[in-house]
Each structure stands twice: as C-alpha cells, then as structure tokens.
Length: 85
Image (cartoon, rainbow, N blue to C red; front, side, top):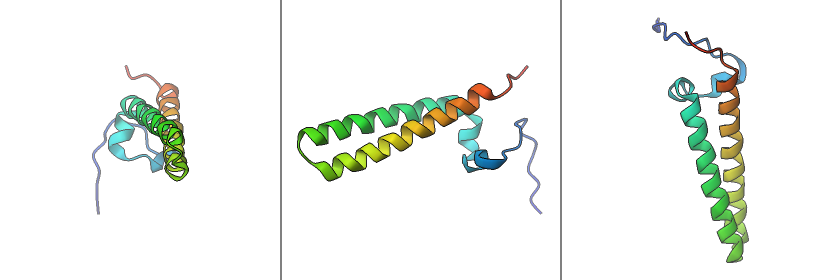
C-alpha cells in the first residue's frame, strides 16, 4: 500500500488530476512557461505561413493554441487557489 506524505496541497480532483504533481506545485511558473511556449509556437506558425509551408503552420498553430490554453488554465487555477498563510 502506497502512503503518500502530506504535501500541504489540497487534493487534486476532477480536471486538476490531469496536471502532473510537479507542475501542480508550481502552477504560476508552469503557466507562464506554457504561455511563452505558445507564443514561440505561434511565431513559428507565422514564419511558416510567410514561406507558404501550410502544413507546418497548421501544426505550430495547433501546438501554440494548446499551450496558450493550458497556460491560461494553469494561471486561472493558481489565481483561484486560496493564499497560503
């Protein structure tokens, strides 16, 4: 039987259980990193569009949108969390 030590974090329920434990402990940093990665992917999509590489542009657009959405979700969860005292 695995007994996990109390980490002081609220239990992960629902959609939050999809977030890896390390990222859950560092939500703000992970969210900002995902948003930055989404921006880089969106920039790569624009560059690919300028060279008329539509397949690559579509791939980078999807990756950028997913990263931006994930980063926004992480930051929303971090903002809604009760402040530690």
